[in-house]
Image (cartoon, rainbow, N blue to C red; front, side, top):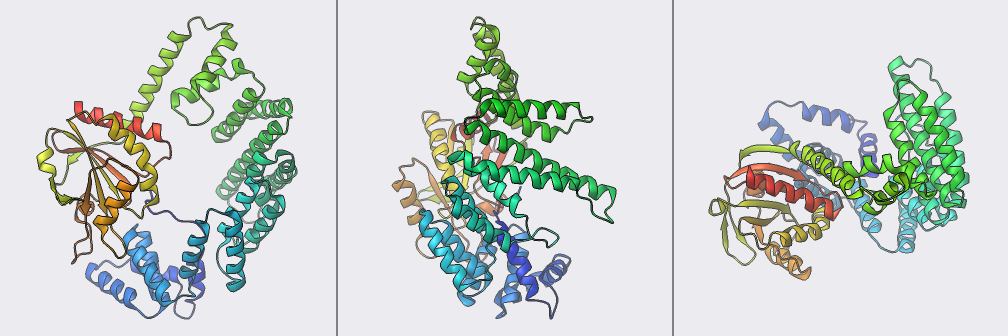
Length: 498
């Protein structure tokens, strides 16, 4: 799993940079040559020269090399140097784009993006234009949605260099429009369906059978995704019976095909479940509710809906508690099976760190306890997004002396006192976390504990058993607090008992 997030607009920078290198060779060719270097010393020497170069293209090359290595620290440092020394570079523009995209006011973002495009008409910010189109679609502003969708199609090409189809782009935006103005969304979705039908019938000369199959697979998925969005818009536009009728026919058509294309059927099944619920056909929805419930799928399935489905199907709630208990058991077994896929067993590297108050904490002193390490940083958005869930987990075990949570602040950036900043952030947000400082080594510029644990992206959580062995390692954050707490609790209990 990639630990460094990337937007389509950032990917576009690579291709822009390629055009700047034509006299020597493309960035891609030079990047390939770097990756193929076998001599470690020569590679490191070359990278240092690139990082210190006065040529923008050299530093961009180093940026993309470290990006490919998932080295967040190096990519961030090089980006900062490029922004400082080449204020009109594509990386500098992307830094401005980042600031604009984080503005809460949509009107302010609109004004700032328009000013940016006036100053840099060739800026590679197509995907941000798509995000703006979707943001305005969510507000029901059709005029602004179309304006930004036009900018996106003007700026962005497909993998073959062809301009994107406007009907396809607008139908994608219409998924968001349908939530605020479903009647306005329907024509855009109908145009999208027409485009996808043409795409399905399209054939390219010289394509191999494998390429044709792959193109058709993608075209079919695009069609069924758009179809499910169209059905959803019908339901929201007070045409729920029509939506259910359409989806029932499509589902029947898909199940008749052999072999069944499972991905497409799952797309339609999800829309079909929503349509059944919108039409209050809870009994017919019960098999789909059961499947999603035992899988722990996030979305429409709740215990209340499950109860309604059971009552509608059986005619009463007699036997419901026994039925529900059996489903819960299956759900727990599924969750445990997923957890076991992440199970490891290896020695946890020893460490000794200071907490934010200057007290020394040694991992060796915690032998006999389950220890949860959470690698984070004040600049890491996903880390901070996970903290409400982590606070719930800490609260759950606050009376348990055999479980210890340690939040290791690592990979500090910028000026200022990292320890004071970390303490302030936790205190200001009223988190009862024990924060340790995995500060960078002045000579290596590395955070020693993160390096020892081979952390390549944050947030990363490590669960260590009482014998001092790592049992689980997880990265990222799903965005669902309860799911995260349950998963972490299950890992803690497994580590405690095994």
